[in-house]
Image (spheres, rainbow, N blue to C red):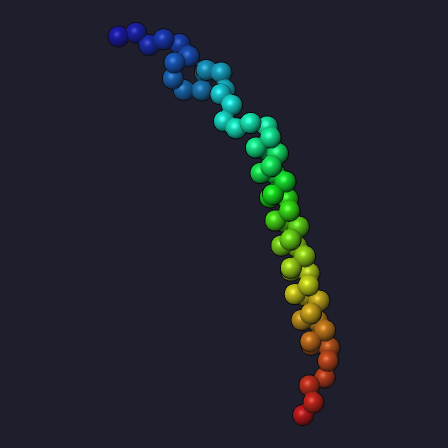
Length: 58
């Protein structure tokens, strides 16, 4: 049996796995998710600082 060059491994041409519109949509949704997560963390930190700054009446 002969082994033809370029039939196995990474020697062949890369095949596109997704369209550029799909890739851009995924990137945009990941960016939006990261921004939302940052905002949630910021609001949580700020609210906990406000809670700790207020005196608890005894």
